[in-house]
Length: 230
Length: 147
Image 1 (tube, rainbow over the protein chains, first blue to last red):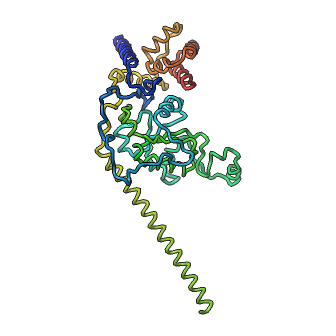
Image 2 (image 1 turned 90 degrees about the horizontal axis):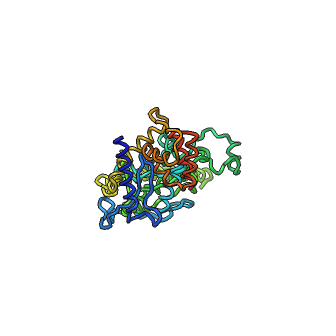
Image 3 (image 1 turned 45 degrees about the horizontal axis):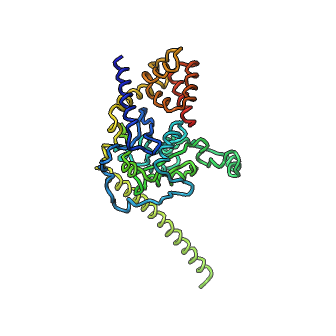
């Protein structure tokens, strides 16, 4: 009984706070909710309008190379998106499990904190050999199926555009591939561009890949919620 | 110069070209590996003492959210076919159903609240055929993604 009262009281406080948000995500959107590692996380902005960014992402400059400004378009056919598109993706594609948000950074970065709803697949996963178990596991998560011993007749038909050939190659079947958003540290980070290029080399359909170029740099500068992985 | 001498020179030239090509391949691949390793080293070095703004950590701005997250965590785990999930009581009015959802299945309630009234009614109709919380949650999420 006491537990139920506590939950109701918590809800009442939460409802009050929801109505009181001065710093919204958009005029018609106060926050976004996502499931991250089994828990509901509310993505919102810092409400303190005097707060100044602290931590590593307050730095303006890092040595280039290797931390060079990346082009706005990472590859032909891959759309670059920003924050509002991320929020839409969280509420639709992520919710119905047709999409994934991928933190393409190495584990050392992931452990510092990540965008809620993200899974971690380090960028260098996608440059491994075709029969590498780590690559095969990652591709399975993305919805791509490994193919082996594809017959010449089948490949010929597929190359003619038949039998769903536009989404298949010798090694992979991308028919059930998920829509992906890749991100890393921001406009000065090459990790997610490398991941995207590696994935395109494997044959992943470019129209199913999105590049959140702003990354953690912009996410932090907007005071948006991060989660520290357990 | 005799023909066989010319042919010999040609073969030597071809061999030299092939040898130089092979050498260039060897050094280029080695160079690439070194570049990748150097990049990874730079990444690890940059990450080693980096911290994120603590004000952006989940829960920093909204303490009561932690209690809700804990409840949701239990619900989401229980809803995945666990024997600990309990069915909802049958025969509730829509208001009673919403209150029960709010008290016992807060995660589902959060998404339910965001549905338009027509879809809330659809969930209530569904509840009358199935009181399984996991099935009700699936219905709510199915309607939520239609928006």
